[in-house]
Image 1 (tube, rainbow, N blue to C red):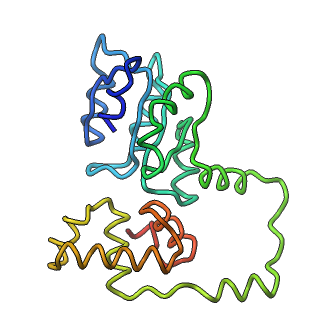
Image 2 (image 1 turned 180 degrees about the horizontal axis):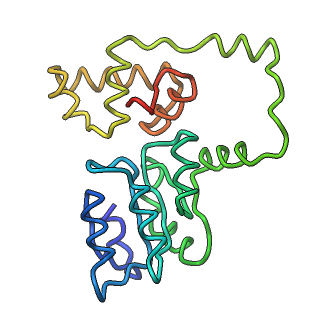
Length: 210
């Protein structure tokens, strides 16, 4: 993400840190101006929402955009309520990150389309219609992941790379890659973020326990 920011001549990277504590240190540094805060939600010493709330209470708060793998409704709504103005899934954000930052500075709210659906669903005035018999049949037809595939997907949701998963589960990198390909095929997705989102929607993956 830092490289994508630095690739834009009109943007300047203030700092890149990997924890809540380090982010608060940067935001509290005198004579340091942060116009845009890009924040993940799953940080090793807490939640990115803590950083968002702190930034919102600064004398001159920055524009805030979440960039994360978490695409479930709970994370989305909670981050927006904390003060985020944009929400991008990591897989979809890198190449267009410069445009998203400019959009945010111009008063826009860059949001990955699947995230926008969550927001519309949450704030819709019309109550959801009861499922039809056909929809109930579809709900029952949930893709089956093996216990190992579910374990791998859970580690993907926690942000581990394929190499890290291979080391922790004591299997080869190619085996991990094969598991992830099978997961993608079974869930009919093409990225890690989509797999996490789809699995959470289907009840295969519980992000509250991941």
